[in-house]
Length: 237
Image 1 (cartoon, one colour):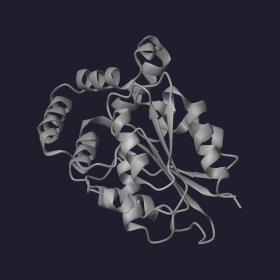
Image 2 (cartoon, helix red, strand yellow):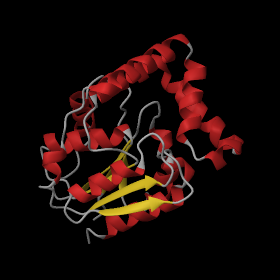
Image 3 (cartoon, rainbow, N blue to C red):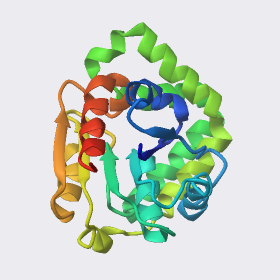
């Protein structure tokens, strides 16, 4: 029996951020990638994702893998879980709630996306990828296209959800499942220290550092990300 792997995308991206990883794993799991571009709260995103799993039989293991904002959604899904989750992967994300001092930064980002979407999105992208990838024309064009397709208003809703996310750190110590925590070595959006913290809070969690990668590891290093998620799936047998 194949598990169901739920891939949760991040801010200003969609299912395409996961597609290279999903392609490598489709023979090992049934892949579900919820649309997290229509909501403005983590509770709504969690309901959307769980709603896409209603037809999954109760005896099929469900594995959550959240990238960036998707990691926040994965934690909310665990808090809301109507059924057991078999395993969890947190990819370039954090288990912390939004810091009050960061809210003005988020609001400025909203203003920038509304006033000059292209320039603001490109600045985020340049900060997000490893410096060596800035000359990778195909990767940069692909990421920019994804961001343009998501657009400003969907991104604003996502940012509102990020600002309002809950503090799930007390829950992490209670998790009894295989957990993989992945992070690009030079992630500037959610730095490695945040992944270390998550791995330390979750009993038995394994931290995997993705070398020569920034924040967008599912696109920057899909082979490595797929390898670690594949091992997580294997651990369910």
